[in-house]
Image (tube, rainbow, N blue to C red; front, side, top):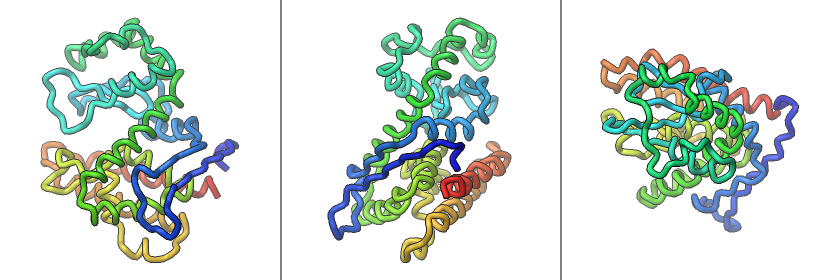
Length: 276
């Protein structure tokens, strides 16, 4: 059982009768338990420790915040990742007002560097931010869902029609069971939607769409169980992420993260067991 929670997750795919072509703009996730989703993503990103809701890794040139480790990129820092923190603040602030200092137009980045960030750990700004992040976890999860739907639609629309059609058909089975939806949402928040030319090593990506493309055709040729679908997704994601570490610049030493990444992926299998 899912911690005694009733997951009334109704995953409605608005498909034309007899059609196998899933349109990205037809995806509707209704009744999604954002409290449960928030818990899953928070555990994967922070280990459930509140101190990691405001965190600046020594391995990154930017801090990250909230259950989804939404990044905030300092001025002058060039990274291939989208700075999601400002967008999350705007989304959640419309539902639960953010601390005043976060509501400034063209929100300025307040810290000189990582050292300055931790010197300000007990400041009114970071204390108020942590309190707000603790109080708005389901709203942050709703932002993750909204961003997933928006980015998925955009990315698919930019691909050649045959490629986009094949990917939509591969997405469809995962939207038919709750653990599949949770796995897609978590992985997309974790490693991106994919098909982003900036998020590649030697031409190879590692986002959600890259994983779906790496899955064997046989997984989609027959009516497999949801557990089989998740196992296939996890195996493909493991392969894609292992390839990423092999193609990454040696100085990044990405092999050190692989064990933790694999543990996160294996948790998707547990989601299906909990739901059964």
